[in-house]
Structures are given as C-alpha cells and as structure tokens.
Image (cartoon, rainbow, N blue to C red; front, side, top):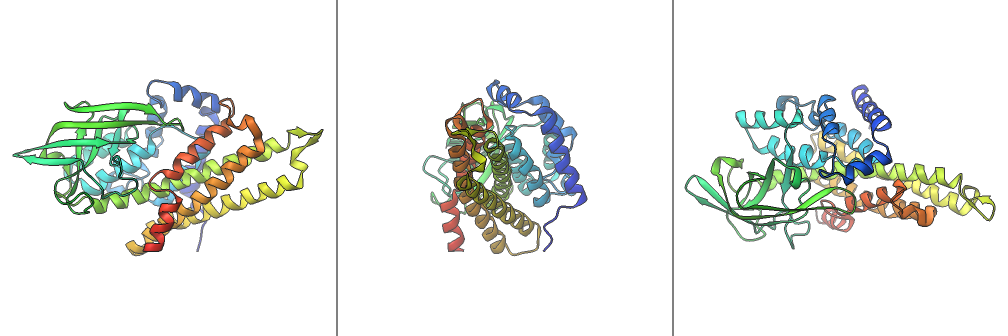
Length: 377
C-alpha cells in the first residue's frame, strides 16, 4: 500500500506550512485567542482564498475533491501550529452534514457561502449526559403545521458564539436513545428563544452552552428526511474524528521536535540533558508513538476514501482514535516532564500544545470509548 502523498497533496501541505511560518507564531496565536471572536477573520478569509475551506467537499459540491487524505494533510499541519480557527466546526462537521443531507439550490448556496468564507457554522449535537452516544438525544422538535418548535439544551458547541447558523440535532420521534427519529435543523443563531453562553475551552477554542426555548423554525429548515439523520451524523462525526486525529498527530510531532530542541540547550549539573541516555530513550519512545499514530491515521483516511464496507471504515476510525489517544498520553506527558515546570507556562507553546491534544483526546470519543467500540464491531 502506498502511503506517500500525491503532488497536489504536497502542494497543499506546503501552502499551510508557508502560512504558519509567515503568519502564525506563538505570540500571534496568543493574541488571536485573547480576542473577542477567538479566531482571526482575516485568516479565515485567507483560508477561503487559498481554497482550504473547499478541501472537505467533492467537486460536485463545489469543492476540491472531498478526499479524507487531503483533509488529514491539512489538519496535521494545523495541529503543528495549534490553529484556533473553527475549521472542524464549520467546514468538516457542519459543512459535512449540509453536503450529506441538504439538496438542490439550498445546498449549493450554503456550501458556496461556506467555501468563500462568508458563513460561520456550529453543530449542536452533544447534550448533558449523552457522553459519546450520538443517538442519545432529548432535545425535542415538535411539528406544528408548517413550523417546527425546538426545545432543549446542548453543551460543548464549538464556534456557536460566532456562528450565523447552528445545526441542531433534535428528536422528532422515538425513545431517548433510539437512532430512528433524529433530525437536524438549521437554526439562525440570533433566532428568538436561542440562548448562547460562550466560554473559552482550556485549549483556547471557543465553545458554548446553547439553550433552545420554543424556538420556531420552518419545516423546510430540516436537513434531509424527517427522523433519518442519525446515519449521516455518525458518518460525518467519524470523518471529523479522523480529521482531529490528524491534528493531534501534527501537535504531537511539534511537541517531540520542541522537546528534542530543548534537551540540546537545557543543562543540569553542568551537562546538556540531551546527552543523558535515559532521556534519549524516552524521546526515542516519543518518536515511535508519533510514527505509529501517524501511520494508523493515514490508514483510516485511506479506508474512508476506499470502497471498503461501512463496518471496515468504522473499525478503522476507532482503531485510529484509540491509538492516537495512547500516543497523546505518552508523548504529551513526556514533553511536559522533560521540559519541567516551564512546560506549563503560558510563555511556552509546549503547554498550549499539551492542552490542545488533551482536548482532542476526548473529542468525538476518548481512547477507551473507541477501543470498546472497535471490540464490539
């Protein structure tokens, strides 16, 4: 099996690397995190101009191909720089659901607005107590003539405070954990009855708790058929899982590189610590974990792009997230240990990378969850 990137993918990788080197150092990122929006609108428009926002979508949807391998090429470089722009929330998760469920002119208009940088989106799917179970939905959607009335609460909604539209996962029928009966609705973020409580996650990303109190939307705001959205939601979440796994790989490689560099300059007892054989062994183990994680993420992306069965694709996603979770714990903790106390200060980007990969570990299911999921398939 050929794991090498194509010429186009290498060009995509190079474009992200050049942007990071020129415009996204640690100090610049820190200022962006502290801003009111929590991301740079200028950078977002640049992403659109460079075609990055079109990468997750097929050519039929106005994108650049929709390849999962293309996606991880970009996400890995995003991870190395620890970008805070809402690419996953808007382009991968929300945009993916629109591409999967919407149709006709409406789909074309929404995706065109997205890829040109003129539409910010959020996906509200997680609820208190739902943990990683996508079918556990208590937010209700009751049909009243040509309208649908939505009531419920969502947690950990990435980018909700900046979103123009929120994709709300709600139940139209069935029991609390049934896969049948789940629909997704487009709701304007400023609609009557929508309450957004924004906060900044410990990794610097903007997130929110969102409450819906008798929010009325047109039935035409439903994406896809009534009560049939669960399969599409699971498919897109799996794709996003591979994407953030690639982001974690990039962040871990950055942690490894910075740890090796630090070990070459830090002295203990008058000796550079990089000469200590015990630390050399530990950094070699970090390198091995990074390579194992990267290989299995590439394999998962290739499976998603292949004609493999849904079962095999699902297994590859869980295998990747489980392995990446193991690498996150090992590499990030070793990086902090070898750096010492300075590794957790705000002045050094190592601590920020540690926080980001720790957050990724629990996104869309932690290592334990995906290990159990793989075993059950």
